[in-house]
Length: 101
Image 1 (cartoon, one colour):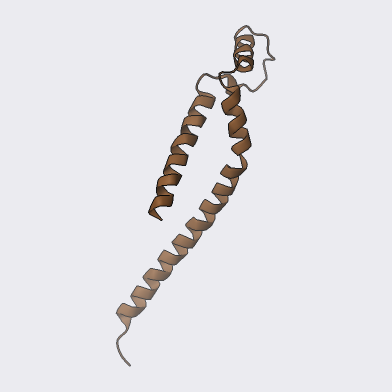
Image 2 (cartoon, one colour; image 1 turned 90 degrees about the vertical axis):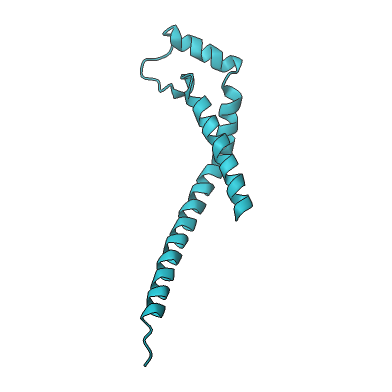
């Protein structure tokens, strides 16, 4: 019987790579499904941010006219802006990755 230690080591190494790749593809696919499902939300937030409605909501919040316990992350001056910037960067990254693969 020939000495196939190198062959076995190679196969084991490739199996580990396959396992990592399969897991990564599965996780990325699920994450992309979730991201894609939020497109309508992202578009609505983009339209809302900086609109007359947003300005009025922001001003009313500053004037103390909104309920104290109301979650108001959308009224922070950076919340929506940062999310939209992150989306732009992510979309550019996805485009670049698509070109590489």
